[in-house]
Amino acid sequence: MNKSFFPFTRFILFLLVLFSLFANPLQAAELTFAWSPNTEPNLAGYKIYYGTASRTYSMIIDVGNPAIIDGKVTCPLTVLPQENTLFYFTATAYDGNGFESDYSTEVVVDVSADVSSTEAVFLFITDGFPQEDISAVEETALLKAWQVQKLSRDLYQSFSTVWASPIYANMLSDAQHHMDFVHILLGKFGIFVPQDFAGIFTDQETQDLFDLMLNAGNGSAVEALRMGAATEDMIIDELQILLPQTANFEIQI
Image (cartoon, rainbow, N blue to C red; front, top):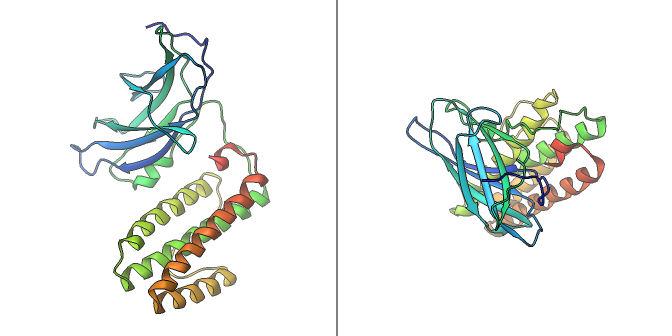
């Protein structure tokens, strides 16, 4: 196979979701990758390369043209277990004549059995994007984002025990993952995160809001749904406030 930078441009591969990890040495990890689609008219498909050493890929998978979801090419991938728990992933685009682009930015995933799925997913490294310092504004915004995610997680945790609906169990898992994502990012920047006690917040304003929403949701199934929707709105609002304030690549991811 000919590998040529031309006619494709480099693109960045992002690891989005890890659905399951090695619960035991015989299980596989289910990963989902996404990247911005190539726009060349002669695009024929994509390949994902991975292995247990950086830029040394023992596996090549032709994934064709996966579905585009929310503007991103989105591709699930099953990784078979090996003794090494670090996997290095990259992707290429190819045309109908067999010409292939250069490798994308590399993504590293630690699928150790002794760490949580979120920790494993988000301990990733991207070539060419060194860790940047963050400003006081970015630090405050990240801590606020973590608190809002915690508020939603704690509400869903309570509502799931009061109201017999699978909605809350699903949203609880989602909120926990998002909360953990921000926690890991804070840790990477060396920012202290308060201890995580359900229903307890160091910020009094957040504590008062949580207590108010909890009481409303515990008293009515309809109000519980409304409180859940309100927390999702708050999360979106926090992201919309944060993103224009930062040019930091890792925060934007």
